[in-house]
Length: 123
Image 1 (tube, one colour):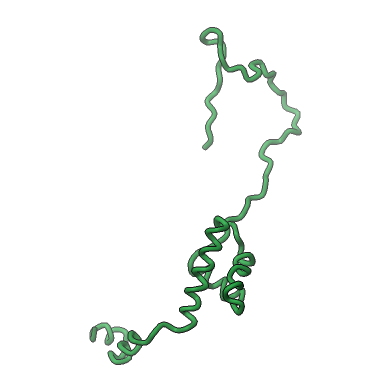
Image 2: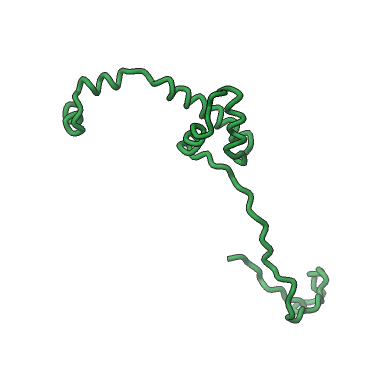
């Protein structure tokens, strides 16, 4: 232990005093806020944003500020899952020729080598 204290330029008595002191009131309160925050986050399946979580936290801790909750949320990586914006990927307004629908969703062939379907796959 003495080598560690010398390495970090700390007195050994200062280290032992720091180790013996109890957790601060604020740290204990932050831990309790995190537990409430985690329950609310799981209840909403990760979709709750900071403001919704703040309402849940303020039921038990009325003096909890938005910035304090943000720091706790950031520290424990409890970010909300955001809904993606709809994006149309197919353009229906084009002048290209459209193939006739010969199968009409009937993919069963009466005899072999009559119906061919390409293998579609996503990259």
